[in-house]
Image (cartoon, rainbow, N blue to C red; front, side, top):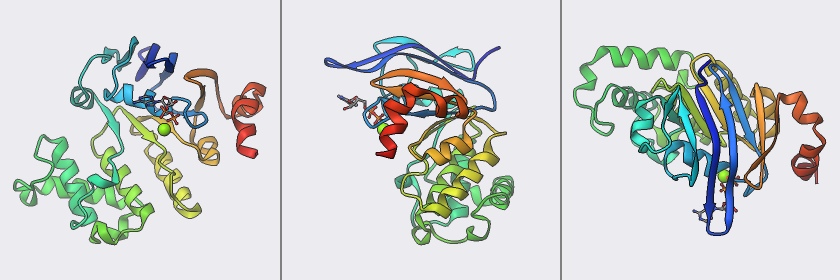
Length: 249
Ligand code: ADP
Ligand code: MG
């Protein structure tokens, strides 16, 4: 079968430091694959190579069977690679509904920052209404972004990323900075999105990882030292020593 994402033998060095040490991993259709590891393990470096912001020294990255290793970031997006928008890309003076409208319009090839008659395009607003109806932001549609809580902004980022209909969504620490209730809402939103796209999830919150991930890969010093389901990873002595043990300290 063709994997949504297939990374093979990926290598990235920064001077004498090997940040990605011959990493191979796959993400399958409908899978939530978590990538965990201590600070400095190389998680963000790996995500940035998948996005195309960093070029590997060696190895390949395939997205839905296409070799994207050397493609610029925008071409990867066009092939179905998604990542959460940064909060800074939300338009603060606009409402939740308007931000989503612009994101949907961007997918259709419009200019992200200009409405371009979008107000007349009823199908965009119908789609936005459908997205909002199923989201935690349902009753916040007409609130401006500046008035949203942090967790609501993260929910909006996720909804905007999903509105691009990616095959694979890259999530670099979606729970960061969220309180317990907000984390639970994010977990629910990600579970609800599981049918729409595959996800590669970098996350420190182990409760979230164990709740969400079909498979977990553990990265330490640029190398995948273990991979398996939540039970495999919890029980793995090398992981406990290298990573989970550190969390308890
Ligand atoms: P993580 O996201 O798991 O915390 P990173 O991918 O950010 O880890 O970093 C992995 C290693 O690569 C770290 O030792 C970090 O200092 C180093 N590193 C990351 N980016 C660069 C860079 N642009 N130049 C030099 N070293 C880097
Ligand atoms: Mg990081």
